[in-house]
Length: 56
Image (cartoon, rainbow, N blue to C red):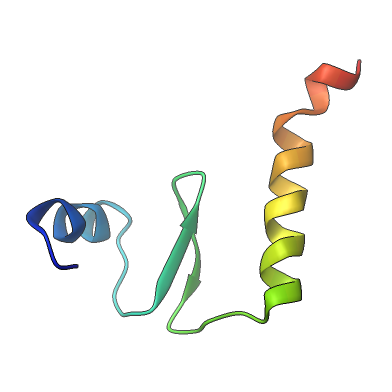
């Protein structure tokens, strides 16, 4: 949010408030900072889903 690029990205994600966290171009958390375990679980879930084709 300190650069024009940051502001543009914030708008692209349609975020309305800070803090906001996007993963894989999807706004996942808005107005909260998740617990570390919750954030790690979300990242791992997305990683596994993205890389599922590698296991077939």
